[in-house]
Image (cartoon, rainbow, N blue to C red; front, top):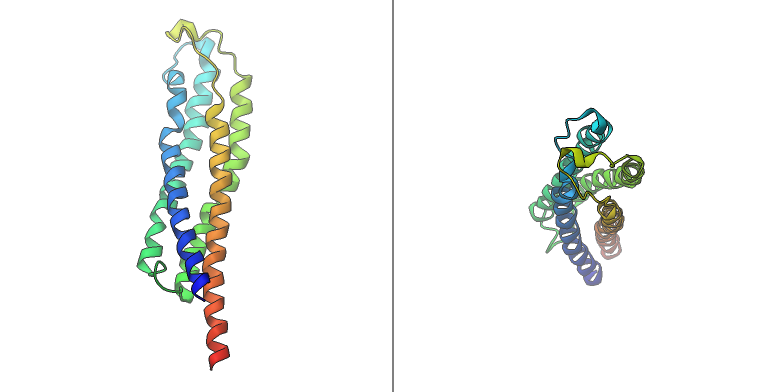
Length: 178
């Protein structure tokens, strides 16, 4: 049982780190695309629309879900899973909140490659008309996001698994001693 509790503690720490990285990524996501903000000319209307509707929409959704993921860290401390085996209520709250964040990770897996493909299909040749003289196409942000959310997804599943492993291991141990 001690080993299961140690796994639970370790996964909690790894989850906290992963959630903070995902949240930080959500804050920095649009930085690489700041030159696309405020484009006014008709020649750049598709770029402006892509930035204002698709990129900002995804960024806002990503921000709220990663903020929820960071806020869900509070459940670990509220329910004392750092030092104790979780009870049923703790397992339910933690698992449901982490599975909601898993859902967003799946959404990010779908959306980031789509945004990248749309971004690459845009014509940036008229950007110089609005002051972006040497605009370079940057796709690393999309790739980094996919990697971050892939790792975050795995960490989320392992964290839920560690909580369940501890809970059911404790239940089984109590049945055996009773």
